[in-house]
Length: 469
Image (cartoon, one colour):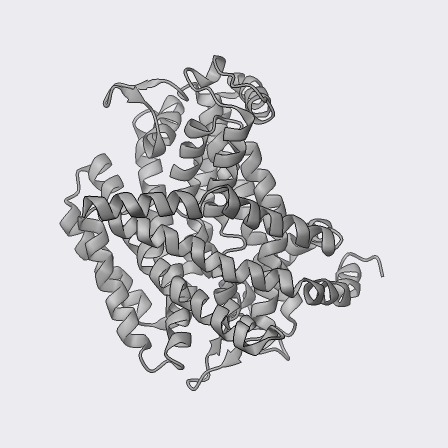
């Protein structure tokens, strides 16, 4: 078993290595340039559209299962997770504080990847036998790629890896993060936490996308605002250190030689390390290019795939440019980065680092707030990923007749995740997460001309909304 785990670790390191990161970020760069930076130029329009009252109701003349805003928050439920708290801390320890800058750069180009996969998924979605929307990169590949055989193979591979990833990254790891956070902070028994999580998940998940989206529409904005306000309080509390912290972040992001000292304590990292961990954690956090958010986007009630794609594109903005930045600035200004954790005798890392940063201003309430944040973020990820996995499962079995089996099984796996550390399952699902991205990226590169044409077609609508036409 240990040998198998070592093999999986090696494969995991390879699939999430430089080639994969270059492919993910490189696709985003290529699509951004090919679409003439319209995703950047129209980000203000997209954010305004997302926050408008219209996005919370179904549009006239369109079709879909849930409102545009509900589709976004369900996608965000899956992406805003432990990566925003634990992932940022890990990146800043392993890659130095400069990794935060490269997370932002990754997100900037990820905006176009997220737009592209969502727009194509909505354009090529289908209505299943229950009258529900069924869409995602697998349908785009099957119907949109010129070579139908190649498209069918890519679509099957994407759906298969998405199902595997949904049980691992979207379930086991998240449930384990919740139970460990609640056990470590409040002393809650992990088995009791597992039972409560399983019942909650089952009640919500059995109701399907409409129930999941209703819960996500409330939980996601609440948890994001809750965490961001806490983070801003910490940053203001350490405001005297903030300028030095920002200087350190940018200095270590672009320093060819390994540097350290000052607010980062014993942490030393070169520019290459900052890029590697910044891109890895950035891609993992916002999932731009992975294709997962496109599955949820397909459920949106909209009259134009481009309109909804702009709304879903903002998921990358909220996830990385807002929430991850808040975490990064909390850590950079706190003075705990690179310091020794008295409980372990090693430097602070992961969730403990973020908790220690919050504790510098909030005292004992800091770790409590971070633990609650982890629990809310991780539980919402379980809900969002259930829908992703279910639709991929539906695709593999050519219809929704077995969906209820998937929902019940997925809910029961939550208990296993909360009560046991399954390292092999974690590594295997991490590999599946990377492998589902490869067909999606190939598909977007082949269809890049169509993506650019659709954006240009819709541009007069954007200009009208801005009052420039």
